[in-house]
Length: 479
Image 1 (tube, rainbow, N blue to C red):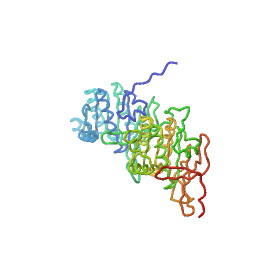
Image 2: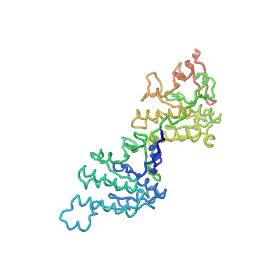
Image 3: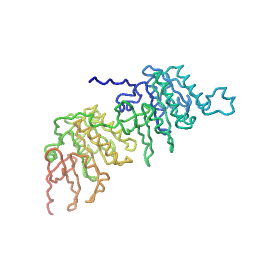
Image 4: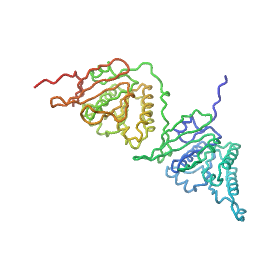
């Protein structure tokens, strides 16, 4: 069977969108970008044209809704210019020629015809490779009904196709509107939707969806995105775990505390996920520092993602246990991100983790705390599914991932977790605090380990300035 020929593509100007599209937009086609006001349609269009300018192509922005000065202001807000982009300002209500002014009524057909001619003249004069049409809302208002609107789009599509122009048409969605249906989706080669939502607390959440793209095995569904000053639209493609490489034989990763390693049957395995669960003060973050220090001393790279503890607090706490990690951080062997959780989406977080692991050949990843990360998101159940894909990717990249999970309260038996995440872990390390004879004692237990044997004994955990130790749990001597 003959090998299927891959169709040529062009860059959309947005790296993450090109990744979703498996390379870019198929050339010489007709695309619709939909979104509510403020969703980022104009910014997307400018990036599309700027990519064309960078490739040496002629580009034209036909605007029925914005002036050239407004477009320049949008470009300037990102530090861009419109150099190389021809802006054609038209008005669907003012493009009628002088002959039309002599009529008693300015009919919709006449206004539509004159608008079409003005656009076609601009295209014939400048002969662009790429075109942005802003926006379909004005044409829809002139046509007044769906059949006429469809005919206008079909005619314009044929006009562009005959000239080999790749076009991006912007379509404003308005609340309560019903125009974003089959009349344009059936005509366009591809449809890209921009979505924004304002939650009860925190920043605006933005997403992008490729709802249609003929002949392209694109990554469907929603992907997180952001609009950033100086960058424009930034898209964070959803992680596909299958893109990572499986490792045949996992390695044992040790903590540096022999008694703790014995509880895991000799150590934890690379390519697995460990949940460290416990109430406040039981030593969860200490466990993360312990494994990070041991890996760094072996010469391995470690990535730590903080959602609750400040960077300086982490360093001082570790130093109080005899673990000095500052120099490893300065040397780049230890990568630490101190996040403001309300300002990051699951998609962006996943991309950051993926890039850090790939760039630094990281062996141990710690998320401290996973509970703090989930609490910052409006839909925590969905966030658990998002991070499950990330964890599978890390496992197939042969990374040991430690998730710090906080339980409610300080002491007591009736404790729980807001969202059940126990299914995420290959290994579960449970830390508890108990009061006995006027003294608090820390307990440590390996309650689950999918791969290989493990110790089921309850042992005592000591955390002191001299370090961390684990001993057999013996009753306190009677006084």
